[in-house]
Image 1 (cartoon, rainbow, N blue to C red):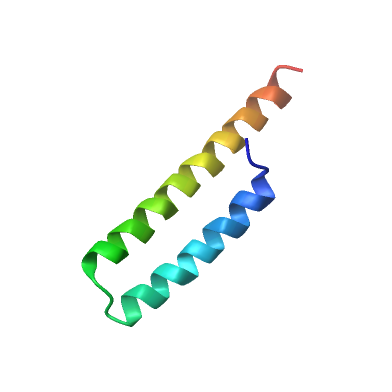
Image 2: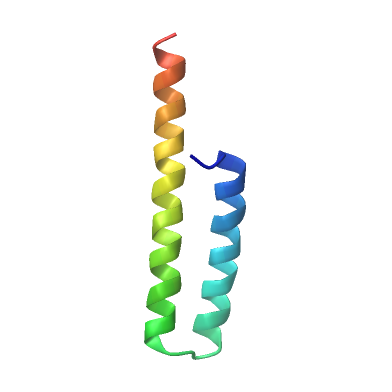
Length: 59
């Protein structure tokens, strides 16, 4: 599992990339791909957060 800090950095990079893709009028397919990647990164981050919460809660 990726560290949360690494995932946050990847999320920020994907957000910036999506902003660029949208503002330059790149194809809808490219926007969709970047958006999906961002969604998956956010899911990974949420899972890490949830896992960390459960580890702390059950100590």
